[in-house]
Image: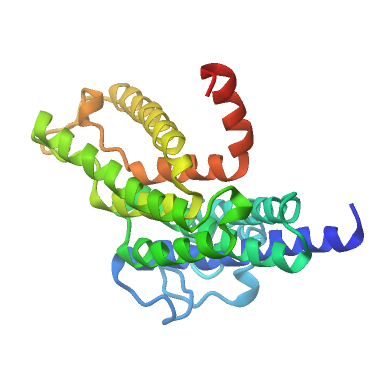
Length: 287
C-alpha cells in the first residue's frame, strides 16, 4: 500500500476513534436530556473532570485499568467498545469510498467518505442508546432523513442508488415498519416495533436506496430473534426472582428487543457487502 494510502487509512481509523469518544458523550447524555457540550467530560461517580491525557480513546481505558483516575470507580467497558467500533467503521467507510471502482478521484472519495462517516457514526449512537434505553432519539433520526436524501442526490450513484431510489427507499422503509406496527397491533393488541424504528428505516432507505430494504429488514429480524432467544435462555437459567422483582420473560413474545441495533447492523452489512449479498441472493433464488 503506498505511503499516502497508508496515511489516509490511519487517519480514518484515528478520526473514527476520536469521534467515538464524543459518541460516548452523546450516548450517555442525549437520552438524559443533558447538554452535549457542558460541563466538560467528568466521572459520573465522583464528578472529577477528566483530563485530556486520561481521555485518549481506548488507550486511556487500558492504561487506567478500566477505572477513574481520581476515585478508582470502574468505567463501563462500553466506552472503549464504542471507540473501537467507531474506529473500525470509519476505516471500513474509507476503504469503501477509496476503493470504489466508480469513484473517479481522491476528492470524490473524500466527499463520499464524509457522508459514509456521518451515516455509520449515527448508527453507532443509535445502536448503543437503543440497547440501553429502548429509544431512538428523534434528534438523530429526523435530521438524518434530509442528510440521507442529500447524499442520494449528490453521490448515491456510487452506491448503485440515486435520488429517486433514495426517496422511494425512505418512504418504503418507514411505510414497511408502520405496516408491521399496525399488523402486530391488530393481531396481538400489543406494541411491537416503535415509531423510532420507522424513522430509522427512513434514514437507511434514503441513504442506501430501496433495493437494500428487503435484506436489511430480513437480516435485522433474524438477528433480533437470535438475540431474543439468547436473552430468553439467559433469563431462564437464573434463579427464581424474589417477591417484588421483575418477572423474567417466559416466551419470545415477551422479550423486549431493541430493534434499532439490528436494523443498523443490517444496514452496515448491506453498505459494506452489498455486492456479495446480491450475488448470494442471485445464486440462491435466481434473482
